[in-house]
Length: 249
Image 1 (cartoon, one colour):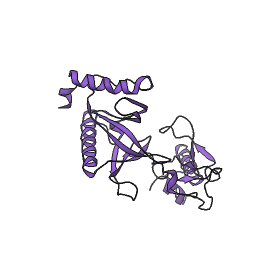
Image 2 (cartoon, rainbow, N blue to C red):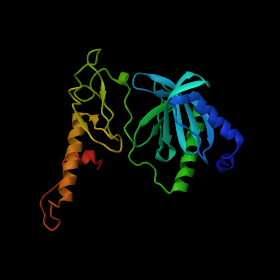
Image 3 (cartoon, rainbow, N blue to C red):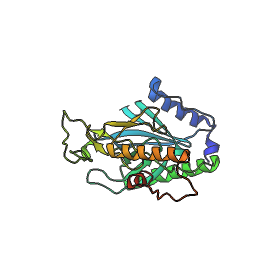
Image 4 (cartoon, rainbow, N blue to C red):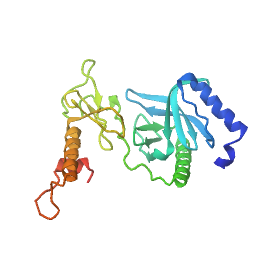
């Protein structure tokens, strides 16, 4: 069905309309074989507060952006390859209902639909596209998604030291270590940065605990690569609890 629609005039017109809405700030979306399957407005749980975002589902990518004028002008375009996406249904909260998480290796975030039916339709279509794409490429689903950022308003105190209170002068920061953290932390609890090439070419801020875990894991890998620990001799070597947690063992 998707392949049949790829070269139709109506599909080309619909994709061109989306490109026009993003204007010069967006990337070209028309590619041979690409089909625009649907669109809709979802509420994205952002750092400061939940915000409406326009989403476009293609047969190989998910595109979303900020709404300036609905159906006329969008900006802040984001493009996510579907082969890097996994989904997780989430329970309702007092503020947000019909939630689920869109997880990728570089970024994970939570969205909510206007109704349970709408959520089911989005998840069903996403899963169908992902399954079809993975079967074509032979790739495996993303096994280590990025940690979703916990919204700023989820806590008034640092989630590591638990005594620093956030204010206008005391900024919130987020730990970027995935897939296990994403905590909202104070500056004193996140003084370090660590290079995680899968997420960014630049070192990213991490909390002090995750920094120690990452550093210990890296040092252990270096030791093993230089064969410091002989496989022929029992050394009593064992992984520390910090390292085991970092490796998710």
